[in-house]
Image 1 (spheres, helix red, strand yellow):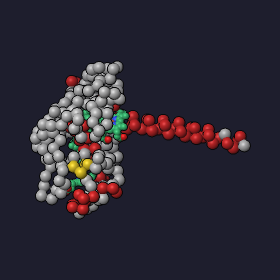
Image 2: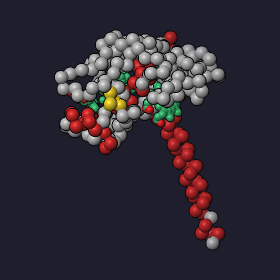
Image 3: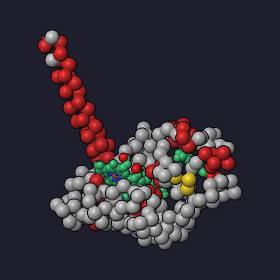
Image 4: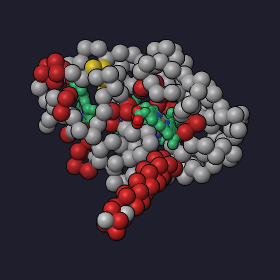
Length: 231
Ligand code: HEC
Ligand code: HEC
Ligand code: HEC
Ligand code: HEC
């Protein structure tokens, strides 16, 4: 009996430990190899010379900028008053709302991205710096995004980008005629039923084979687009 029962819990124990090691490693390894690792171990050009923590640039366990629509946020929000909103004669969504001029109580998930990607706020400007390192120095003094990853902070900045911050529900799918049922989406993500930057992007990792652009679904064959659009 012993010989038969003993190996099973042993094996199960090893598997549990292995899975735990793999999954905790996977989170760190995932973001650690991306441009969103702004710590000393970062692989991009915008990185710290002294901060060893990775999550701190975006999240804090305590004293976060919190409203019920965002996760434990730590990066200083942008004060940009207006980004503009997408419009076209065939755009059917009716509630696409301006996301400029928001504050901590009204910020949406897309404002989290724009807190760095509108180029107006230093990436090391934090709400609650880590106790171990109250100030963070950036390599070469480069603190703001200035290249093609800077979407801009003008009042028309988002007019030429895929629309965000609008409700994607069954009524919209019916009105548009070329959208999948929102309940049947796979890979992509809606936030309170809304399309946001993070509907297409996962800021922690990328499913695209090129490893680029933090995409939730690969752009090969435009699979990402076809996750929502029935074309
Ligand atoms: C460059 C910014 C950035 C960094 C760095 C970052 N996150 Fe996030 N995180 C976000 C944004 C933006 C969201 C909201 C969008 C979303 O849910 O994908 C988010 C959401 C989350 C969520 C809630 C949604 C989910 O996926 O479960 C968790 C948990 C999380 N992050 C954990 C972490 C941890 C742990 C780290 C460090 C290893 C980390 N994040 C580093 C930007 C970041
Ligand atoms: C704390 C600041 C910060 C936040 C918040 C942040 N990013 Fe970034 N992101 C960066 C930096 C820095 C880069 C590198 C830019 C560069 O090299 O010019 C980057 C790069 C990117 C890139 C380009 C990746 C590549 O390989 O070229 C994408 C796409 C991106 N971010 C999307 C997002 C999205 C979407 C969100 C929100 C869900 C977000 N980011 C939130 C700082 C941030
Ligand atoms: C409908 C899907 C979708 C939405 C919504 C979306 N993106 Fe993207 N984004 C993409 C794709 C796909 C790429 C890669 C494009 C390419 O390779 O040319 C990309 C590229 C980027 C890049 C890299 C640009 C570069 O040339 O370096 C950044 C930064 C970025 N997105 C940020 C954002 C932010 C911030 C938002 C919200 C305001 C957002 N994205 C909303 C799909 C999306
Ligand atoms: C998360 C779901 C989702 C993803 C992924 C997505 N879209 Fe969209 N897209 C929508 C929704 C919803 C609308 C709004 C449709 C409407 O109201 O007419 C929209 C609007 C558009 C529009 C404007 C339509 C108009 O009538 O002006 C275009 C063009 C478009 N998307 C192309 C793309 C492309 C290209 C990709 C891939 C890079 C993509 N979308 C990825 C959900 C998505």
